[in-house]
Image 1 (tube, one colour):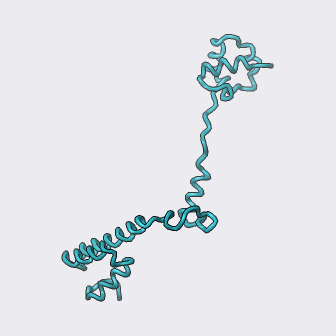
Image 2 (cartoon, rainbow, N blue to C red):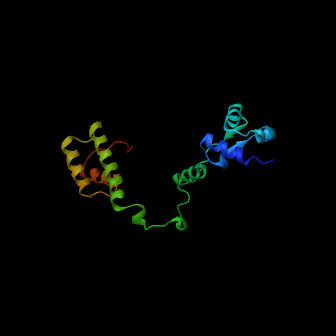
Image 3 (cartoon, rainbow, N blue to C red):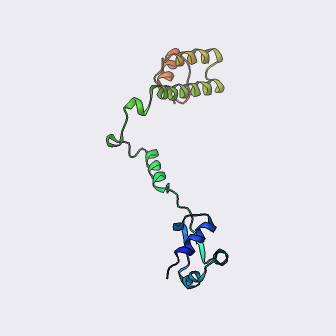
Length: 152
């Protein structure tokens, strides 16, 4: 039983492609007897003919991979495409270090570990790139005689 014309008419009514038209296999005889668009419209209302949903690209695999990369997996030599500087540019690395140092300094100032003038001094030193890390900055502070808590 051929229902190609019925599918074409249904596609025009449903405003979709012929391949997206779904025909209920139980009612093929009824559908094949439909000749006019009005008949097809009735069959659509009755649910014998429907438009299939548009299938998109699934993101499940991409999400799973992203989750693994967040854990630090899939980052070995075989997965790398750019140089070390391309993967983590100098500027980005600098931004990470300076922001963490400034955050620490602000916290120390708010707690009262260092006063405003000391804060400004160490802020300037950090901006100048004197400290590799927070630990390096704190060790320099201890050398300068600043009392840091948490060394019990």
